[in-house]
Amino acid sequence: MMFIFANMKYKVSINNPTEHFIQIEGKIENIKSQEVLLQLPAWRPGRYELGNFSKNIRKFKAMDESGIELHVRKTSKDCWKIINPTMLNSIIIHYEYYANQLDAGACYLDENQLYVNPVHCFMYQSENMKESFEIELNIPDNYKIACQLSEKNKVLFAKDFQQLADSPFIASEKLEKTSFSIENSTIHFWFNGAHNVNIEKLKENTISYAKKQVEIFEELPCKEYHFLYQMLPDAFRHGVEHEDSTVIAMGKREDETDENFYDSLLAISSHEFFHLWNIKRIRPVEMWPYDFTKENYSTLGYVYEGITTYYGDLILLRSGIWNWEKYAASFNGDLEKHLNNEGRFNYSVAESSFDTWLDGYTQGIPARKVSIYFEGMLAAMIADLMIIKNSDAKFSLDNVMHDLYHDYYKNNKGYTESDYKNLLEKYAGISFDSYFKDIIWGKGKIEKYLEEYISLLSCSIFEKKIQRQIDVESNPLFVYWMNRKKCSTK
View: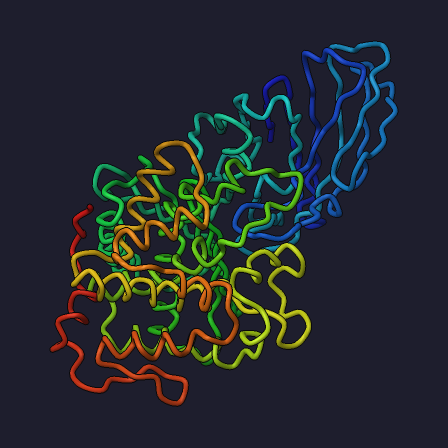
């Protein structure tokens, strides 16, 4: 395998895949200084915590083209300085990366597959991040390649490091591919691993929920989109969004029915597809662009993960894939996690978003914080219903997301909390001061709002579950909330 950066070429070998080490050789060209700094990303998009990927690197060395070693020292945990006193025009580097984590966001190598998230294991020069990259894969001829990057003759092409870092790939003989069209774009399923998923049903359902998501934003922003499914033998569920693709790792519990497993696969797929707009394009100003060297602190996790969690399931209801009972069962599971977490009385969802960079996605000390996914989902539902109620069902959260995409992403800029708040107020026609004070920055106050706005759907919260009060389909507001078409914009 060969990775070619601007003025830098990587050649990667997999000499003994059962040991899980990828051997990497890089050639840096057109050097014009006595020092060369190579940076390995400190985190990966989609996981807002430090990854410390450099802990998986060993045997790093640099040399001239005749094999004479150069002096190297680290300037930080993930930055290497190569001393070049004689002003060599090119330098060779060698290192190995340990790839033995098979989930939706890491790297894995064995005798059956090479799975790489480039953000983990490839270095860049800061001054060359905007240059194009080529990735030549020296793999067996019977291997197929699943990746969002364009490919020709086992060479992948990336326009810059941001795209390369966000472009995982799987190379394996056993990859199964299915392709189909949505709007003017092509969707690809790649399945790696044994499974019994009904591909035709998944294709039909994907077309249905994807079209509903496209209605919100008025366009599908890529010509091709790739679902990379890693099907695992043991119970597992993990998904990571990327620029024009997603990796989803799934394994079934022994006590799980095929129907429940399929519904879970469908829900995570809808969630990750919604990220195609929300966070991969609609992005907080603090992440515009991503800074791979350090924390990208943001309090807006309730937007980029909370709203995505909300729409991931709601779109399945709105597209008719799920009935009310299935949607309510999924919602009740998230609601129960929220109500069972005493951390909601101690830390706001905004503060918890900021602190993903502190203690990541672990529970941490008891009752310290909340989940940007579950708490953010409830906050999104309340905001949606506040807009629908106060605009007499003329507008909804759809309009807010539409504007974040067209007015911010399409104008090459990130958004702030104030920008988001202004859009909520624009479409609701009321102040959201109390909403942000109590729900976004407050502690333990969300249930009061939740009870009030859930009642608009002819439902109530009883014993930690949302339950019907009457036939919700007879409620006009419920019908609009569930079946709304594309909303008009002010």
